[in-house]
Image (tube, rainbow over all chains, first blue to last red; front, side, top):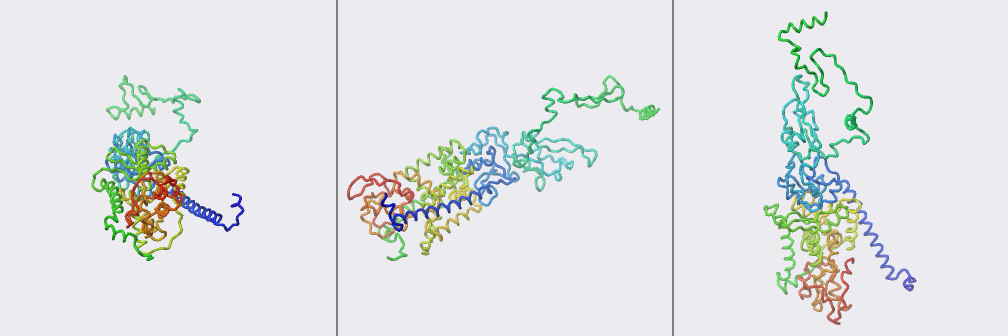
Length: 291
Length: 303
């Protein structure tokens, strides 16, 4: 050992060692550069476009990209050919499954074959009831073009919703344009909407007014310190600050006001009606008031 | 020596064309059959095998999983379901037996691309080469595993030509053919056997399964060798042959023990003297001294 240590620099042993070190540094440096490039590319490639929807039960996107091994078994077991694997050049990470609701929505199979097919659990096997799936959230994104917002009775998104009256309801509003009609406004409820996309697929417009978006885009989030006053009041069983004063109405005899929501009530016992059969009565009564 | 002499001419003359190409034919048949099994479903609706080389399900019962991609997933912090784990164990057990890089020469679809590039390169007599170390693939293997560990995603799968080309054929190519073309051009113009022989971390991973695998090519008739060099010319990993073929003086046995031998059998084909044959790694002693000096297995893995 000591003998080799004292040998001059030009011995085969030391030059071989130097060559080895140079080679290792060269290769290591090259691979490190390559890794940096691929790693940075991976970060960009990880951004999922807003209209690409993952299959039911998909883990959150960062976890999904670590768990999905790009085998396509979910695609194969989808009976409606909804799913496809992203190819190189698509905006979705290469080889991962997704669907575009406007093209083919999820039909929400009760046995969820895509989840069962997943060998890795990138589609979570805990999901056994398809109604619990949260692929995204439908959002009525374009009120200016939605026919129902114009007072028409399109209702198609509401009618096709697999969870009709739970995920989408129709809320009546006054139609100010006509002045005398109602508008039936489709309202999506995030506690029921699975993001299947059937509403987006069925929207009759050239481009859908209702779209399934990733939940992170579709939902706002309340400030964590914020409380809804009326809920807190209910929890406390009464007003938390000054007790509410009940507003008093000065109503004619035989009329009263229901504070629980019914509004103005005419007592059953009273046969007095505001407008008699003879219009002159009303006029006369008005005159009495003046006097 | 005539430089442009094509390997295998003598073998064809001596053994006949079929015998001089039988392992190559068997290999192409296997590669195409496996690919064909995957394509029967999407092309003809006959679902014998579903999925792709990353993970598949055969006849709805047999799960098979690529252990390399599953290892990356594990490092990314994800615990797979039982199907993927058992599928990977089956694959590992199989390649521990037959030699990991059998995957490269008998299964991997990129092999046909790089073989074609190599063939064209030899035909056109292209010799200039970028210097690549054949250990580069182990650096890349380590890098892909570290990337999975630190980013939590399967980074390598975004560029992996092996899974990308196979998945492309079955599920739709997109622009993946560009990656395949890049591999072709690299092997054709940049360096001899650049991808499979120097860079591919998939092959590097599978070579680790071959360190002790019993199925090996043996140069049992090495004293017959007439130094025609045909085996070295056709071998995708030329350094693996030398110790077994020329190591008799140094007491090295006739078994090709390197984990990077892909068991492609092409050396058996092109040898007019029938020096090589498929056999086991056992009984690896020299004819001269009859000693059981086992050549330590797998030491060439990092060469």
